[in-house]
Image (cartoon, rainbow, N blue to C red; front, side, top):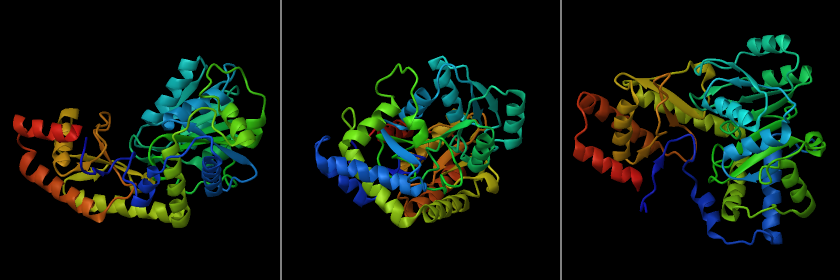
Length: 382
């Protein structure tokens, strides 16, 4: 077991505040009234953040964000529907894969991963195919950190009577999303991104009319959003055992988010992002143009980091500094990602600059010795 905290600079999971971590010290029964009250408060705080009171409801789902995505797709898209998946990265591709596994006749439109989705292209596709029932897309595609135009896409769909299902995993809490301005149908997020809680809970935020509508035949119990919603509304209880410690911590994290405010949190992340750009500037360049960068993560390219093997060498060098960025390179763009979210301390960013300087000035021209690789791998596994 690790005896020290890793300095996490990933797009999630992330470093938590001490107050949030402290909430995981308390044991609670999942069907006790005290825990029911915490669950209700957690749902209420999320709803307040999107101006959704009276029109939407929040349905927590046990598991990672992908559990929430699959739950929403399974619950709100039937085999007779024809969704259009708008893709400009790995997580859009994942939506398409889930739908295909369900046997849904989904179609897709793709854009380069370093560019936002084109509303003009989406509108043109809808003109050609009048059978589209849903539009599914990722708000902040963390493959590169590009931010897609949520409000414009939702308004386009709404005018045509098309439902929207949005992966807002990495944007919720850092980018303002208002259900009053953008009448989306379903939006999904999770506890361990910009909410700044621990992993373990996903949230399906759904229009009340959609939740109350007659559901189609379900092939899954655990992914049934409507059934989970009914249980929470009628009894205040989750249908099966929830992650009680995670829920307590997430509720505290939502309190901190409410106090800081989404706009201020987004600005804090932007400051972290811009400082990372500054300290790494002699060695790396942002992949995205400034106008489409999200505050959540930064994709960098660097001379000499051309293959996954090159990146692994850099990654292990950063591990020597106890710095942990996202551990995989995006081969298509030859970029790697550094998270800007969570309780990142200024010292970590300075250390990142020092680590980059040492790596690119002194070690990029030579292979790492076997002893150094082995030592870093041991630390990485702790």
